[in-house]
Image (cartoon, rainbow, N blue to C red; front, side, top):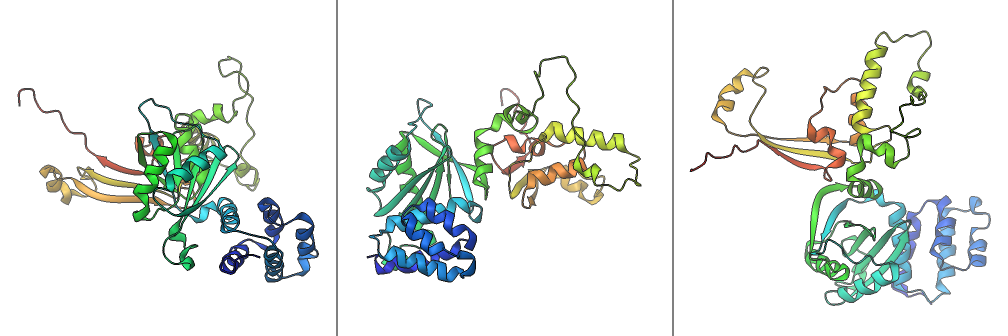
Length: 363
């Protein structure tokens, strides 16, 4: 029989999935036998989601389910809906420059051994494509707190990389978790990068492919026609769909300027859709340089006092939005370095300050 305290957690979890996704999720979970699941989902379109969930719970009650089974389903939910969380990227360092590239079972066994020194916990590790998805449920307080979001940590790690992506971590858990990860992977330091967002795929792309973003991404994404060293002219690309949708009676008098803008944007950002970042943040600590537009600030500029301000770009995909502004001619070229290279700097939180002049020799 399934433990009573798991029933509520399992019911709540199953209800979070969309009605039409439940069948594929249960098959992926693999806990309920196929013939039993088939009976539950028979005539699914004629049943309410509540009825389907209760049918699945009845099937689960005949099984010896454990909290690990429920945790595995929770992990499945969270990698299918990873954009509902905020994620942060951490970088691993070791003296040799290498760390142990552990596969699913070995990684899980070693991490569990290390976590046992600090927490009573349950651990799930699942390989999705080339990444390891890890769920750590820390048992803290009463049994009713077992499923509290603050007691659950999610991690994503590509075994051949130096990066780990974490969901939010409770402050009281953070140091112990980091030490357990360092010991597991035989590293000496783990450093939090100023790279955060809601798309795990995009964060991994920005961290793993820092040297091949923007215009260089065409080689990684195989968007180059033929040999890039060949002198033959490249095949002309099809005109953008935007032009196709324009009324034929309307003519663009600035077609050359438009093509120039699109070419400039492509050189900086590439042809592909940009990785999703929900924000870019800049904290400025520089001298004020806009006295032509604000003459009253001249005295502030002369004093040499830093002009502090905070700028934030925010949206579903900020990099794609900036590229769109460039395509429309709403951005001035050349773009500042911290904008044009935002996709290659491995962070989205910046502090911009004036360069300090070297002090004269002998002083």
